[in-house]
Amino acid sequence: MRIVLALGGNALLARGQALTAENQRENIQKAAASIAAIAREHEIVIVHGNGPQVGLLMEQNSAYQEYSPETTPYPMDVLGSQTCGMVGYMLQQELRNVDPSLAVATLVTQTEVSKDDPAFANPTKFVGPVYTEERAKELMACSDKIFKADGNYFRRVVPSPLPKAIVEKQQVETLLKAGNVVIACGGGGVPVCREGERLEGVECVIDKDLTAELLSETINADLFIILTDGSIFRHYGKPDQAEMKVATPEGLSHFSFPAGSMGPKVDAVCKFVNSGRGKAAIGSLFDLDKILVNEAGTLIQQGEGIEYY
Image: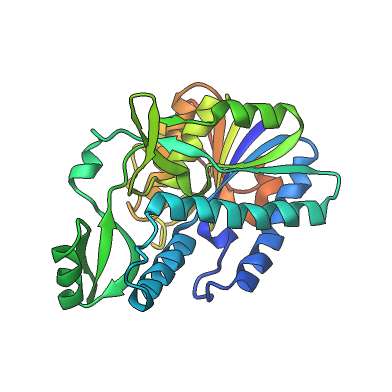
């Protein structure tokens, strides 16, 4: 079975943890153990997040520019590609440490977006360090960057356009057919726009789960799994909450899920199931083997209604 796994942030960094290489490696070791257990029997593509990692690189860039003003900060597409290499390196090393027989390859992957996407007219995705309002206004006055209030501080905002195409789709296929576990589209992929025959990097952030869904369609995956904190719940956090075992896009359409957390994930799995290519699931990374046999997490498939545990 061909499976695309979208790893949530908890696979790389637990809430409240310092963003150190040691902490990330410790979490990745746990993730690798779960993934390696199913990689022996299935074709696996891993898509990981990179939000905290890019944020740290942006802060380091900003701090270095204060020391060396002529050294302009690297653009977000370049920073994104850096994190693809860093996180991919740790994942592929720890997967092989769990099972030396596994062949693992990390592919720095470009994801094409459209400059006509409405997201470019209204940047909303917060990235990078926090600033005072005064400093944010100074930065906006001397650059084309946009800053908005985020609580008591100001942060830069960038567009979050929809992914259109996976540029290296053929390379992903080739690596899979050669027997590799493939780590691709890290952070949603390096965002690029097409200018005639040329590809050029753009300053934006692509939703990792939406790119993973597009990749699942592109390579005809049998199963698309978003690995996060757990299953889909009806009325999560309320007295009548209930954990969903099996759901359908039609059944899920009757519920409202938070835009900042479960909402985009539900949208992504429903989109894949509605494409008619296969099934999808949402669940905990550490229940991955049970998710495959519908003993944990929420399985999403075509049909009607919802079944609860």
